[in-house]
Structures are given as structure tokens and as C-alpha cells.
Image (cartoon, rainbow, N blue to C red; front, side, top):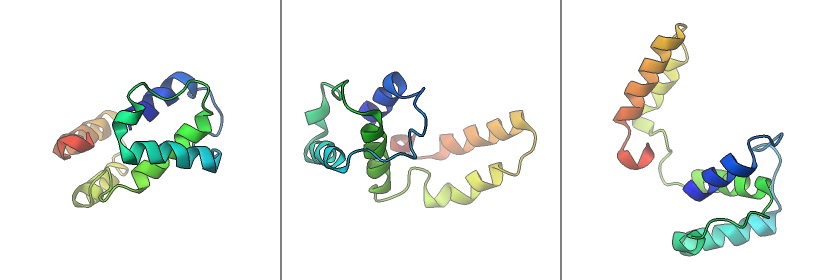
Length: 107
């Protein structure tokens, strides 16, 4: 996951529709296969010539395929309640509080 995020930070922050436009499915499937066989296969990172939409699509696929959501079912209601906090500094405090309650692998 960190390889996808770093790639997007470097190559995709200025890209319009980064998570709305699908990447080439065969390339997504190829990268996903490498990821699922062994994340170590991506240890050198993702080829810089790879389309950023492919990497964004891979990230979405990996997150969708997690057995439990990144923001756990247990804390889901708490995160949703944060949306109702109108005072931004207070809302940020609430988010941080709930993030700290997530399992360490989810942070």
C-alpha cells in the first residue's frame, strides 16, 4: 500500500480525476498479482512510467479487498459523528482521538 501512496504523491497529486478514471485493467491485474504473490516483488517500487491511474486503481482494489475496512466497523459510527462537529479544531481533535483507537496496522 505504501508503494502506491508514495507513487501517487510523487506522480499524481496534480492529476485530475486520479481516483475517478480507471487504469488499464490488464496492468492493474498484473501489479495486483505481484502485490498478492509477494509485496516484496514491489520492493523496488513501481516503475515511474506506470500510468498513475493504474496505481490509483490498484490502491482502491487493495483497500476493497481487505478483510476488514481500514476504518474498522467498531469505530465507524464514531468517525461518522465527527462529520457533525462544526468547529473545525474540535472536529480534528475528535478524528485524532478515533485514529489513535484504530489497530496499529490501520493507522
